[in-house]
Amino acid sequence: MAQSLHHPSPDPALAGWPRVLTDLPGPRSRELLARRDAVSQGPLRDSANIPLVLGSKSGHLLTDVDGNVFADHVSAWGAAPYGAQPPLVRDAVTSAWDRYGMEISQYISSAPVIELAERLVALAPAGITRVAPTVTGTEAVEGAVKLAREATGRPIILGFLGQYHGESTYLTATSSTDLPDNTSGYAQYVPGVILVPYPQSFRAPFHRGPGPYDDTMVLDYLREWVLRYQVEPDQIAGVLIEPVAGEAGILAPSQAFWDGLVAMCDEFGWMLILDEVQTCMGRCGTVFAAERWGLEPDLLLVGKGVTGGGQAVAGVLGTERVMADSHAHLGGTYAWEPAACAGALAGLDLLADDTVLANVHELEAIALEELLPLVDEIPLVGDVRAVGAWTCVEMVAAPGAVTPAPDLQHALHLAALRRGVLAISEPSKPLYRMQPALTMEPELFRWSCRQVADAAREVVAAP
Ligand SMILES: Cc1ncc(COP(=O)(O)O)c(C=O)c1O
Image (tube, rainbow, N blue to C red; front, top):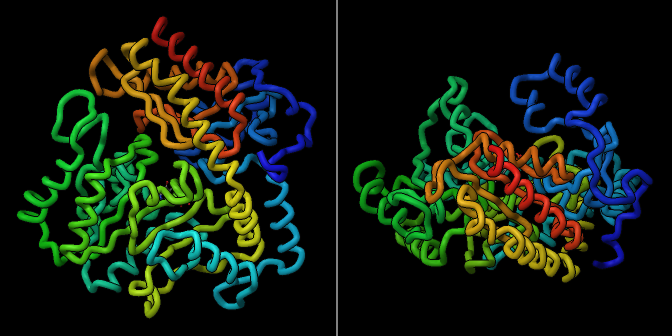
């Protein structure tokens, strides 16, 4: 790893290896969680899934307030791609803040803001020439929807079931990972969105049993059913899609799917809108996931990893045609604050070091080596997938079935947690997901995978 990626631990308690010393939650966490639950809105009271309160983080380790140390496979949901406090990012953020303070960059610009836009355009797939700033990924997606409608004069966005694009009331209608979000009264059925299934490789639409299968069937359905009976192609402004589905389960569509989708975009004048909020900046082993298939989107959305782990930054990247003469207003008071941009620039410097992407490839290889054999070994492990520094294990209800097993998945998550591996598992999503920093040490990652494998053996032995 390059010099700048080392994380001298500020806390001696963190210097070692994961270790869990108390029941979970431990006594201090229990007390704080009770206080949190007394004042928090419903979904934030999730002690069953995350039975701990953060005490501190350093490098790729997370310590709870009871002194338990975990390998961090959440990495702030991908927003801390270089570990907890990468020194280069910290220095860039603090010195930019010392120099510029808080500023509203869409009114008063500054060098870090301009340089970040230039660097993103230079890194982006061919055809991208412009950038619009936002604070969150949600706003970036909302902005792209505006831009696609403005550029085409058409009203409808074609989305994919099971995708996640954010939490605004509009986007919950295109973000279908959590069914209650789409149906619980507060989520109105908004006009202007048509959804077709995401091209799944395991729990496939139009197919019984586990994959792999021909995911271009989704395009047949789109052409032969949706465009025939539901919407005329010239009413569709753009296709909004994650190049690798994250929340739905680390799913990477086939080259044939992308070729077919791009051909339809060309045929019907649809904007290709790639939501790379979660996949950008190395998560999938390339700077943008679009590179895997040679995609040249009209609009490309960035977030999370682009922060470098500093402060909130997201944005819309787009072509000259879509963005140069646009009147659509994006951003807001906090969009691309100078210190946040300076941190993002430092993150891009780290990513420019080849060792980061090389490490991501090594993590992918380790995940497949350590966890893929579980599919043959344990009949209730339905599938294991890894794309870059993104790994998931799917537990199933019966051997050979694809029906999710949420209780077993939850048990796996807790058993791994007791062994010192903190990853992502949510009751509404059929996957146990490891999403470490891109820079996690291969030894720590391999150890973590072995803990997860042992946890899977434990929970199937005594479900
Ligand atoms: C693919 C994708 N799009 C959009 C978003 C929303 O980003 P944010 O949470 O920054 O609003 C997320 C967040 O997880 C995401 O994964």
